[in-house]
Image 1 (tube, helix red, strand yellow):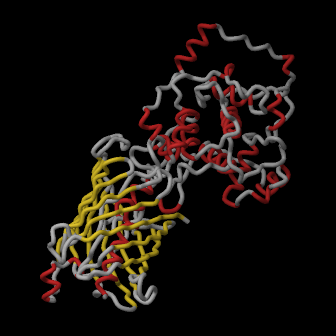
Image 2: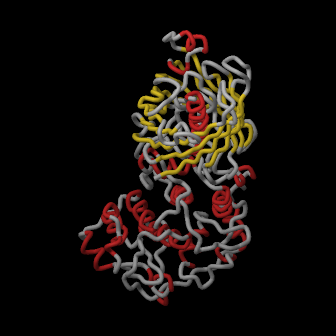
Image 3: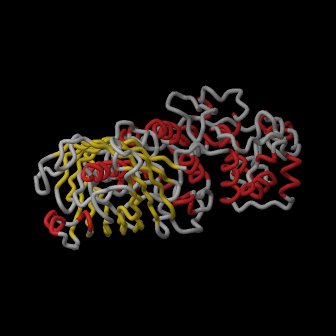
Length: 531
């Protein structure tokens, strides 16, 4: 029956909505279940940091006791010892509580933003930007904005920052050259080709900044001075060396002495006056050491910030649209199952695939979704394509207009459904790790499948109100109530894995018996990826 097909499609789209991108339920004058991709489109995308990476960051850069250079137990004899020790003594970077520095560990973009913001406290030269994957409660939100506004870092298309992405060496050099407005007199091709054996691997966008970084002696290459390895992930030792040299170029740190083992890896360094002609530095007194320890002491990070997961739990809808949607760089897939379709005793399932275009935070995003509505029958013979235009507004507002089932092939339960919807996320606590941290609400008007049961049966071409509310009860679970215009659906949305955008949503359709033959069980599973 057509009813089976359309009902299953609605269920499927709700699961996708819960994952990350706002999704559309398949048109059906009698919807059954869910479409919760809505609020997750923003919330899940905004908080992708893994718990492990946040723990590492906080241990590295927010330990309550400053790890002094003289006590770091794993940098003695390291090629980067002088760079690391110099920055640690200034409180720009930190060791771990166990006294180690772990120079070979990678650095994420968020961690680099924290370091560069502390190392170069400069005036902003451009306005802030709302990165969709950096939510309000993210630990590095402020330093990311600082690094962006001061010109050290930029984002990616679709207003993303990718804070947990490991930063390549070339990005570190580009950030420092741009943020410090470094220039070079030499031609890029000449200086790069003569300095590096692998100059051809430097991306085109980075050649001019890397040239400036080279000319200003920011580049430190270990173990071979003439091999840049531009696209390799920067380690903590690499970042320390680059930052040290950048500070030295600004006169904020002393240049390394020629006999220092680390100096042999600085590209372009000229022989310096032998250290024998310079006075030996005097050791610090105990009082000076105590003063430095107090001066650079950093408050400990709250435990909740260490254990916050990357994917908050749940969505906000199980049957009606929300105003949040997919943008450029996002794609999604999902399946659904219902034990009994409306007015039948038969089970059914559906599958859907979609992607986003445009930038909803700057202009308009377009979400496109294709659905096959009869997995147990004519699997690919019946289906639809739906569209939604959506816009993100300040203060966590969103607006959207869409057409469910704009294109139809095979048999479905009805025609197209035109709608408009407004959504908003309300933060209930400052700490998103706490229970009951936020509520997402949506209210809309629509025709087609959003009409009342009576208008559908009588064939009246009217519009009707629909809406939903999702309460994030825990970090991995949301409670959802959804009025589809015909019936009330209740569901629970669960994120089983903290670092993976998979959402499982069991729900009950028509719990009040308004629109059919009783309560029905619906189950959806969705996954979202980025490209």
